[in-house]
Image (cartoon, rainbow, N blue to C red):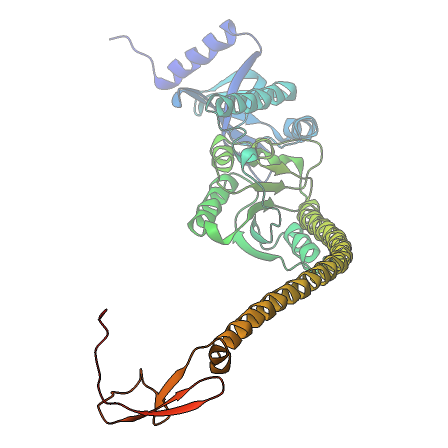
Length: 414
């Protein structure tokens, strides 16, 4: 049976490739398993995925003499070194070795394509957050008027955290900020899950805080990609407390900045923002108190003047009423005196008439008119019981007659 040795087959493959392939190709692939050896050679895998499923993989090499210049140029353009997870457009030649198999020799990488891919992925995340309706959710959370209780997500060794803490502690107004650090990794692939874990821990005691601050010190632009992930942005966007960011960069806005309540450049700027917010609230309160005090003082002045006016009117009214009452009293007194005189005159007239009547019925006057008065033992015979033999006395105007009763006859009218 005709056959080939393995080496012969591999040599055939090599010659076939050499004779049929172009000297180089521009290929789009994702970097994986990147590593450098002591000699400066870069070994990596180039892969392709469809729906997160690996569909192609091949080894690649960037020789040291190429890698030194290529890596420096790539980083100067993209702001990041070549690293795992990047999608790159690279110029490669196909190499086939009888012992080591097929690989690609990377001769050139276009950093502008990588920038475009990063921008595309970033835009896809922003569009997804927008479609889901969460991109502005944290911005709609009301910022407390005096945010004094602060949950801080940062690395405890970061210079930015120290600057932030010192700025709050030594504020000119003596405000008593209370901060609690929730430790997190602030750069690299571990940063997003670490920050999300810190947010979850804050959420467990959410009533203890007014605001969340995510800060880090300065750093290379390369470190910002960790703040452009969907999961981190989604958590921050939907967090129930306002989130402030100060991750130490001035030019580029990360997706984390985009979804946060307020984006500030540095940790110190975040501290100044918080101090300024409390100061603004205090000034508003002072203005309110001064306004209240002013209006209260004006009201007191008004009421005092009103009381004085009422006092004057009352005194004037009292004098007027007193004068009127005096006149009325004088009038009533005159009327009373006149009525008393009239009453007294009437009574005197009645008394005169009564006196005249008494004079008319006086026994002497009765006797003068020819009448007589008969008594028994000094009493009128009409007041005593008479019997035969009694001696009675009869008085006339000028005589006293004693008689003895011999016979008593009843009046015929009785």
